[in-house]
Length: 151
Image (cartoon, one colour):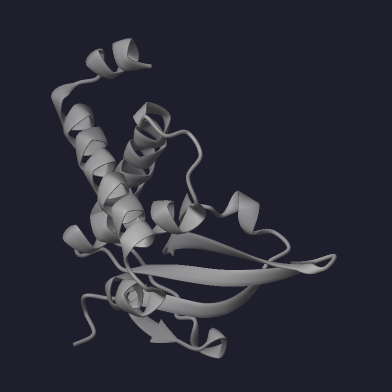
């Protein structure tokens, strides 16, 4: 994996390194902070009924796909292999917010047997960024949005 990283062009390396930094920050934040503190960085909370749809410009679509690829690469490079979805979603939200690209981070729940499971995923317009395939069967509980056009 490290060898393939060195074969990337400079721009892809830069994005992968940014993604690694945000994954590290997200993992540290989840381990050391309460959810109330974490909630502040996720975006503006909305009820499930209020999920907005964003139309992305062609440039925003390209950037969203670049961020998606960078996160996929970073997840394969990081030294810890088991990571929770909230860490991935937080890293994705920070990368998207940095480029002022609107996103929806959703946290959903699923009751399986006697246990309640939770999952987080991020969608940017119609582009799934992280956690979307695994979100099947989960019921959205809350959405967090970041829309730079809303003040």
